[in-house]
Length: 127
Image (cartoon, rainbow, N blue to C red; front, top):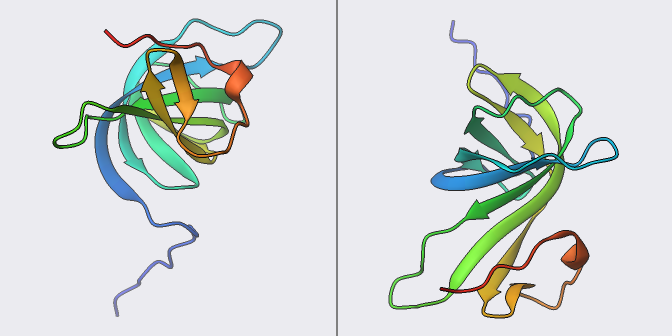
């Protein structure tokens, strides 16, 4: 008899290989940003490969650097503020909603009318 485990996630996950910037928001001071790579992602969270040592329940900010779209010079990033829900050997899983931001010469701006979180992110200038 084959035992098939039931998927408990409510959102589909997609394999993505993209660089990510990780920053802790626990405590009085935010930590320095560290790097890693997204292994898979959904609208509800992501699995990250990183040397960043994340603790279960730790609050983090993520910024996923997306590749440019074909035939476009526009740059986009995905941002999330979430909580570590699983530790793995070379990384961690985080639960948190992602929002799409467009990077402009004035800085990163929400790609829609949503403006939540605008004050907690640094602005990046286009080169």
